[in-house]
Image: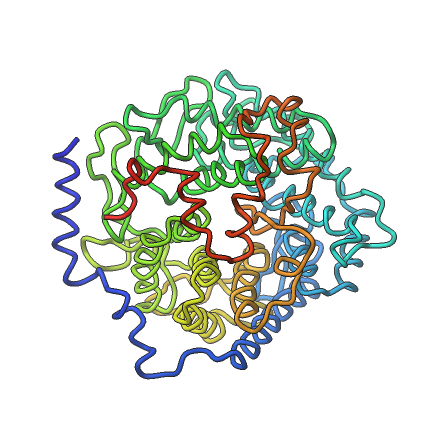
Length: 533
């Protein structure tokens, strides 16, 4: 295994003088301009709020009830199932802003008008994280007096819709491996000619939404099938504890053996940790511990990550892809701060170079990867910036956020909303706005500046700690959802330490206090985890 490792290290030595920037280089802008003050943070927070409403109002005026807005032509398009995707994805952002009127109107409209008995074949992954997650988060806010956003007329309609949708997705899990098909028809189930190939992220990033649904409906089937999918993927890991990118859900054979932390795999790692944090099932943390250790040993070359063969660890791609940018934020949740700081600095250097992060940046040619020049308004780097500021209160993350906001305002703002950037080198705009721009990108940017301005929101001052789903939806750690002995017995979760309240271990993470080392010790012993080099 050492020869491939040395090959990767040689790549990094060659690149070191040119592309691996130190923290001081990344944030040298502070030498020439003042850091963000508390007063400026308030102004930036308000600017982000205006950004949200500019895009949201553009969607409601020109696209609703279609799925997404075409912000250049000011038209709507159905990109998932034709059920007001952007509205559902935006619900908890409206609640976070304290917009009672629009949150109430939206919840009431969805409860009266949305139905899923439509003959559409949809992505299991996207439907789960965007629609199911959006409905569940909004239900938990709208039904609870403690959130300050309870809707008086609400009577559980969103939860009913969520359960109906999930039952229509369940046939996708009927495979020999337990790993679901990538798509399912909402009326007929899995199409006869449906591909048997799915991505690791697509099959293994469903546990939070389905698990929450099980605990709200008292039906274990949803949690069971998604846990089986995670276990089905992990059971087919390589001898060095890496997973590939695509797998045959019938044979269990890997059809793409490239291992990495980005495209097609990313949120599999994310949900291993978050499922433990939210539900207290220790099987998830045991898997995360092994998976994280392997990723840091075979994929990490400080501060970058590469793709390798899952069996041999031979280098496949010396490539930064934009979906990797969630990783420093995940490391913050895991309490492994130092490598998160260095990796974020490297990733942000790419943003600084182009004004956005391209989908792919080749570390060998030091240029945008051919065919991967776009920036589709992704949130991952902003998300990690928020988590690192929350953990460290280092003002350079506010500086980074200010740069990101400026790029979006001057490069992506267009006629009716915010446009995809089809080429980061020329800042060419494209006529599309993903729903996750309002669910995640704007949300994390607003939270970043709100922290600095003096937080006054549901997450920081509300009655619960929250876990963010991979779509940025708010899942509260209430007694009904989080670890209690009854769940361990009823749902078949492994909760060896269930006598210890989960909040004891993670309250520091979610409230911003300095308990990172304790959390990291819980997840992975310092003597065995190769995280910092």
